Image (cartoon, rainbow, N blue to C red; front, side, top):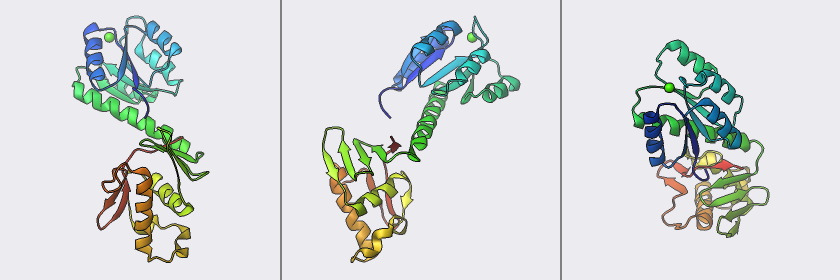
Length: 239
Ligand code: CA
């Protein structure tokens, strides 16, 4: 969610290394090209990347040996890159824990799609792992702390929610990018409200929007889905 993701391209063929670097940098990744297994090990020890692209046919070691080593470090993703199309290599690579497998020659757009997908999946896993333990959720420029009902923006602004608003926001944050009906958004405290049920959800949504949306009239975080309910449109990461 923060900063540019770093990718190590471990590949001995200069043309492919240069192509991968060019393509991935074009998509906003920070790319470190490495020509052999020894350099790769050193670079990873110095600074672990977010993802390694590993050629199986390296001059100084079998790429599978390197992948086996890499997989012991769970902090980053691994995509195997190979000219060999053999099923046994493919299965072995995935069994060793690689996140994906790409056979040369490859379509650069296809490769970028696979890279994006592995990075996104690992981000989601990291966020989900935090969800069980955490009371703090980050989205857009906000961090919401359900422990003290406070929203803090990156520019220092703070907003305090009522308990009912906080409970509604939490329900949305726990199911981002899914349409939630007003029934699903109803909290346990809703009975205490004098307003008719549908209306009270709408009023609370509008109060939350005034606090978190740059333009509450054109909301980009909490979207209205006409006839269905509401949808939280931003990525959420539990911190
Ligand atoms: Ca090679």
